[in-house]
Length: 363
Image (cartoon, rainbow, N blue to C red; front, top):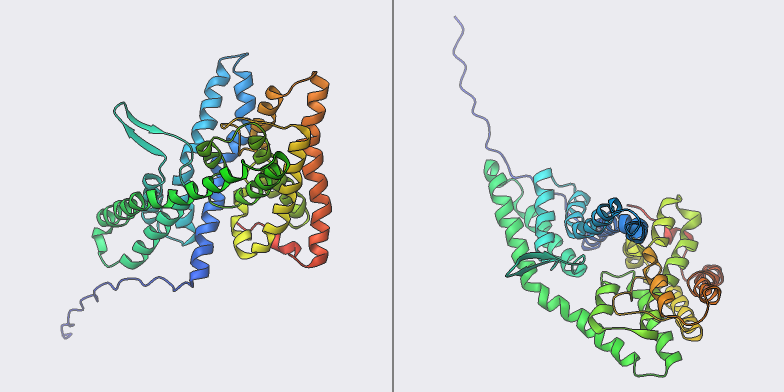
């Protein structure tokens, strides 16, 4: 007879310890997730928004198309949260919890007596902070709660990080309001100096987490100030597209040219000196805006050439015949930004301000 074997009890599960990350790598993961989320959420409207808006006047079916691409912008905070989670190789439930926390703290949803209203893409800085907080909570919790994780994660990491984000949102918005006050001081200067400074400022701002459109709307930029802001943003589109062309496949430069320059935030964070040529090209574009009389409205400022919002509004505010207005627009939004880009990019390479590989987009 065989002797009975002693019963073997499985060892209790040990909470998985996620690999340690440096502060720099953690930050880059958040920035990379944000960059891809911005591209995914904004590109459809940047390409098709104005086209569908025009075609809707000819056929109502395009109204629905315009609504679809416009509404996709509202998903940007969720996309950022999900993609940040994917950068950290989280599980599916952990990833969507980060997305949910990022959405509720972005400020995109406003609670009114008529219900919840969605507006814009939210505050990207706060969205990133909340996504980072959710990831930290999830990494701390790990598998400590075992089978209860599916219940605990949405509450502890999702609602907890979301509440943290809602509490920080008013303070984070102070950054935007402070920058707005700085821009308002520019508007007190004589027109050429004002346009140059606003062009340079917005050229740098478009590669930061701060919304150029939200900031311009908040301070009510109009007239030449609005035109200079759009020209600065367009100058960055042109310079980045030129600088990225040889070190990337065709997709990333075209995406930047269409209006998603924020996808280059990780590159600027790694190499802040990239801001030097952006500011210089924005300054040149701002001067051109003053000389050519490029104007805009508070609601068109900050878009640049994205979706043709800036050029279309500038055209409507111009005086003179159609050929003359078109020549000024082409000069302002195409010739000046690209001329500056083709001059500044090789100069910056020769001076060692940055290397070609610094412009490689690695999602």
